[in-house]
Length: 177
Image (cartoon, rainbow, N blue to C red; front, side):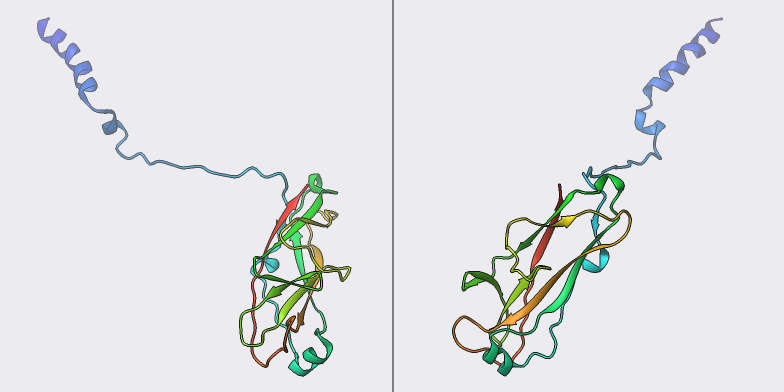
């Protein structure tokens, strides 16, 4: 009887002496994360890291007429849901590389030409830099909705445009209200 009692007390002692890590030696951690958003709308894939090439630019024409023809481009949103309908879409064009000419802001460029770039909205008005501007309302569910803009080359405020390359980069943010 003493022998049976001793084995009965030995089992709990063995279980309690094993560290908890031994019980879960093959366990793994899983990390969950996410983001709560107020809208399902997204900038469409073709509008992310967009590259716009301006073709057939003659320096002599730019110097004589001050600006080139406008090259159109668009920014699109998609994947909007019904709860997004009629929300205002605000776009903020961001750059610190601006120069003011005649009351309008132009984007400076890198390269040999010395030209600046003007960006206009669908009404052919200069965009407002570094502050949100309403570009429309969400009116398409699950489809593509695009907003039109244009870019043109302008000769510098002083001096002439020169033969050579140019490039510039801008950032934009989209918000919905």
